[in-house]
Length: 120
Image 1 (cartoon, rainbow, N blue to C red):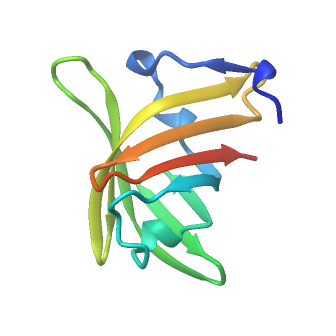
Image 2: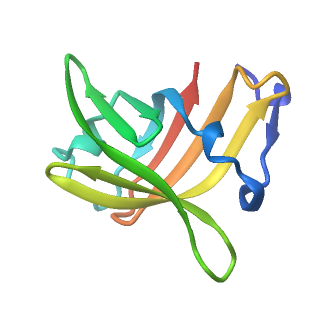
């Protein structure tokens, strides 16, 4: 996949449904994040309306997610709730192909972890 075919999405006008679907973890920088946490071990993340599934190899954990926006700049972030982990991640970048079939999503978590997700 080349970046030439991907276009930046204005995050202040980001429709929530652009985030739904199956995402693959393409890159991750842990920084100070516990490497044994569910999100630090994720290989795939599935975001369906209200339902979150984090895949870690052959295992998975379920939870909930929602998009929230800060009041000042309307920047979107994800609230992720798993049984053992509640966190927020700022959406720092979303890129999509013109047909919407290919996407890249960059997240910056409260713990300092940075994750890049791709679809398909």
